[in-house]
Image (cartoon, rainbow, N blue to C red; front, side):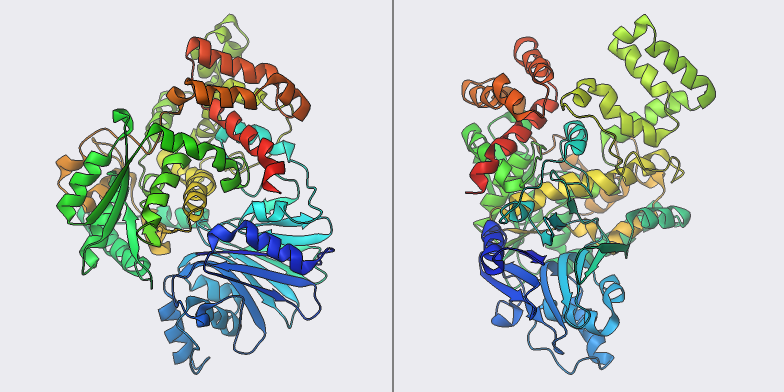
Length: 629
């Protein structure tokens, strides 16, 4: 795990600015760093290294290919690099390798098989910058699901890129304004969906995408080498035809293969264990393929309603892992909050960022790599929200849209609109299908979200562009919508930024290409059952952990933000961030709406998740000058 950064045609001092970018992401790679400048001086590449595979100088970056044509800086891991290396040797493309790093193998694969073919044969998580000296072309590549971040865009007349958007904002002359068009999306979701970022002219490279920009580096083109939508469509058109037991057998095989590959490292490896289905499955299979005791880690909380450590301890004892747990106090969690704006580099407000950071910090004291169970809910139909969408849609779908739509309009233009229940029904009646229902549901449930920003301009994004009925089954459509946006832009962002803040590499076995593609072939009856979703994943887990250990309500990885914000210290912090004069001076948010939401909370105990979204936005915004010092 590392951090990469660079620019083309930079007007200022190249050496000083690439070093400034590297300093900003020191936490992503504390072990070593290096820079490359092209002979013409128009291309600069920077790298910070967290040594995981081949700890010697042979794994250092920037790295040049054997021929001298290509130079790479790269963040991530290629899990099947040994197989790719064997192919290169068998095809007589190379005689030998200088070291044992996946970086060197990746470089030679690019050289001998071409960019798209080479990356298509690789399984892993990565953000890559590859410079072709011969063609004077820079390539940026991102992994299939979006585990590793990669920002890019223009700062003045310079093309720039980095793992961390904070690295771009510290460049000399950076003056890109806040992208007001994305604020409504942020206050609706709590994060900014790709390809957008908080700044104008700075973007997130989409998962599964190759970007190419050629000298004079003022115009780029992108191409997909893999598509989640196409994988889902292909899977649903070729459903698994065996029994549910056979499906569990195949899933177990694929997960074991993925986990065995992802446990490979030249540094200590462990796993997060939250006592849920997903992380318990990963740890159980890790223990089954590992010779010794797997290291597992969890945090407990003093708030009983939020504490799963006791269950994680029971599962760890049953599996025989070497288990470490840490009970955190309320103050431990609160102390993290002022660091979040810097940590994420742009507004981000999934409050589980706090416990994720704390478990990462504790885990890093013992290991350098940790596996996680992320992806299980989205790939195996685990969220309760999916049931809600299906239930509402099933009540409406029997009535033709041409009948429902006028009825909904009638409700919305009648006195019934004053009743929130009828207002919601009026909005739902006007949707064309379950995908649109899933998209507008947050807006219907939180109507004030769209009024927080002072700027309202339509901003197309993945949910608004999702084609109704792309997949036949309701749940599969909303699962795909989550895998296209919520998972890469929220879940994976949260895990990457919090773990890398303490220089911990995280790996996600369920996002292995073969696991993902197999998951899309599963019929819905293999996923949903009487005791909830993820049936086939449960079938695998119950081979290792007794059902009764998991037979309890899901708590999730969350913290009691609502309670904390009522207490004096955090309440003072919050009210300072939303002080009316400050909001008016900033000119981005509507002070009346912000204070209506806050007053409803403190005086009437009406909690809206937008409270945290507002506070995280303000914490980031107010910290910008401080971050750049």
